[in-house]
Length: 103
Image (cartoon, rainbow, N blue to C red; front, top):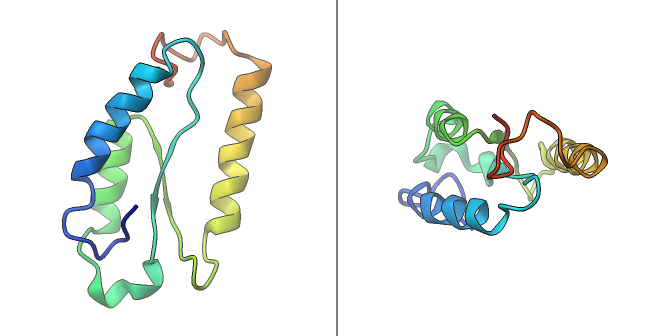
């Protein structure tokens, strides 16, 4: 995993996202994109807008967090777990495609 100050951290996400979608073809997938180390904003390489755009283009939710300060961590996990519970309750919900991602 890499933080917002890593050199082009979104590139590995492409392959990772394809692999998740491929492996999750038989059930809904709960996935988020998390930008970590937002407390180190001075060294930031990936803007919030760029991260949000990338996540949206892959139908994913974008979060900014800091493990050091705790910013956004609880909210991100809470949202992710709510998504997991919803998908477990309604595994064949028509809002999800064959790849498990929201349509």
